[in-house]
Length: 124
Image (spheres, rainbow, N blue to C red):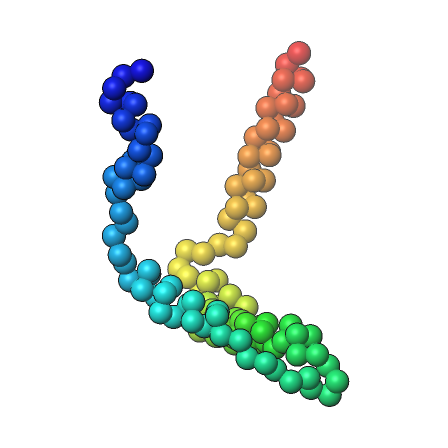
């Protein structure tokens, strides 16, 4: 074994000491000073009407998310109605808008295919 490898193998702590350290960031501060103290806090909750605290907290935690989501959805629907109308009327009011334009193109293409098939059949 090479002498340099023998020295390193004899001192594994020396390799660990040479590892690069991470730069300290705002997220590290947030984790240490905000998240860990909050998650480390324990508050003893009393039973309510004979229902254990753990049981009613299963309903308390999701309520703000559901209620908040409902109001965000209502806000988005209101913005949509202001933008395109409750049933999309403003989309149809655009100049040059033809709701059946795609169907006309499909009918024309289908008719070309049928005409081509009919021509081949009569030509054979």
